[in-house]
Image 1 (tube, rainbow, N blue to C red):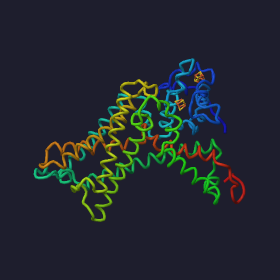
Image 2: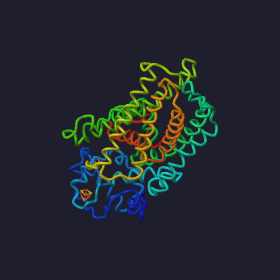
Image 3: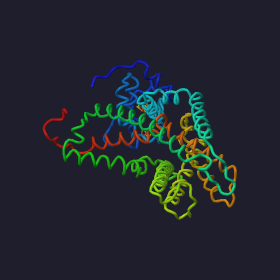
Image 4: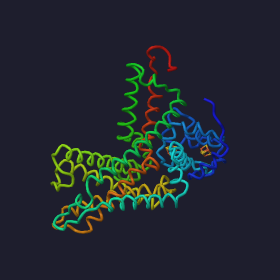
Length: 397
Ligand code: SF4
Ligand code: SF4
């Protein structure tokens, strides 16, 4: 692989939050400290070396970039204040911005005031668009879909999903192509026959089930504050609670829509707390709000090394997740009050607008790591799996 030199790389990375890593002399303290290092004696300092010599393509095609959980241990032992942990976080932001071809991620990361303004304007746009098509506010019972028609929300939701899918797919394809080329992975070595398919299925299971949903390495290797914190305050648990909550709410929304489609229950119909979809939504909502609240508190206090530096993009994401979760609960409360409170309609409008914004901005901010990390973990698991002979000759397909 020919590596082109980008003389501006170091300066660019600083704009994404990296410290000055030019003083790094590759002493290897960070490697000795990193709980993720097993066979790779060059992680994470190799990434810093790429930045020092301007090897942009090598940096962007490094699957290892996404294995780091930002525990901050490496920064504790760095003798030159190169802040390798912050460097890794900045490099991931830089990667997200480079995989995105619209330039929106770059703006969100490097121009915090413009990024925040975009977030506010987008929420206002969704709210005004829905308000323009609003109906009456029933005073007997809270008729949310009488106020904002379900079809309107559905149509906006479809539009949002199209944008997210197109931007997300383009970004993932760009990333996967770079990582697979750098690792010598070909389509044939992944799906070219029964043995490669078995190996790929194992790598997929490891990336999605074991590492992403189960958080194995985060729990076992990167839980550096395990002895100092009870389980419900540990970083891996707060991260997992937020992720599980988000996925649970997504599943509850899709299921609720599916029930309406097959005529079992109209969307928004009051149901008892033990009704499966409502129960799933409530448990997921509790997890999401708890996880996001504690992550905000920890970031605000800034006691742990891992959260000592925060960017406006970190705060924007946490704020959107928290607002979506909390307004969802307030709405649930309003729905089950004996008489319809007028504020319930406005909370509904706000909740839907912020939720739409959170989803549409996902490929352009930190939330994108929810897709890029599993892809990188898949390639990492593939690289660690025993090689298999590729059927029908050769690996050059
Ligand atoms: S980042 Fe710091 S600890 Fe790591 S190799 Fe460079 S100087 Fe050493
Ligand atoms: S932040 Fe933690 S996981 Fe990431 S490179 Fe440093 S020590 Fe390793």
